[in-house]
Length: 209
Ligand SMILES: [Zn+2]
Image 1: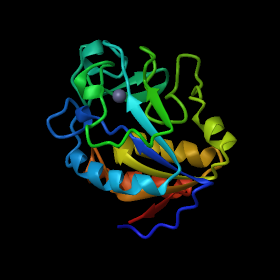
Image 2: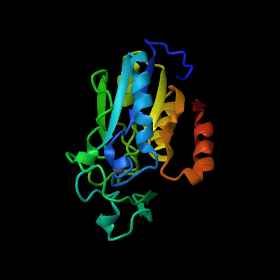
Image 3: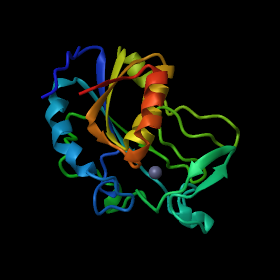
Image 4: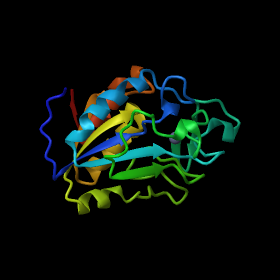
């Protein structure tokens, strides 16, 4: 068990996208993605405020390569930024979009679904990716946490180099102290860890574990 000094009134745990589609056998499988679920479940009871995000896309979502007649993992300029195109994944209501059965949902205070706008992706739990109006629309999570007195956010889940990374950057930008529970994450592109690590560092996110 990690040595973590949890302040129950001011710390929150953010479990990112623990969904079968991001795990081995899933549509957008992250290597070893299933390995983080049990250890995350083990630390959940140490937090009073627990948030779970769920990637939740309509069919034909802008982030799907199939929607553009392209191949997965190619990139495309969307609303002025370089969008990675993904296999169809986490289609809302599908089994791949459900929570992994070992995710403890009873202690979860808030389930945040993201990416539901057909035309805008959302890696981060705090803000959508750039939209057609050139802004990144907030999800409301920062205000929700702040109103509950949360000052520090512990991040874990999938994928380290996309939804965890973007959430960490946005949490820091919103004024939270950010701790990434690194062994409780897995990356889509582990070979690009240096790039992700530089962004975590630039955001002031602390990696532990
Ligand atoms: Zn997605």
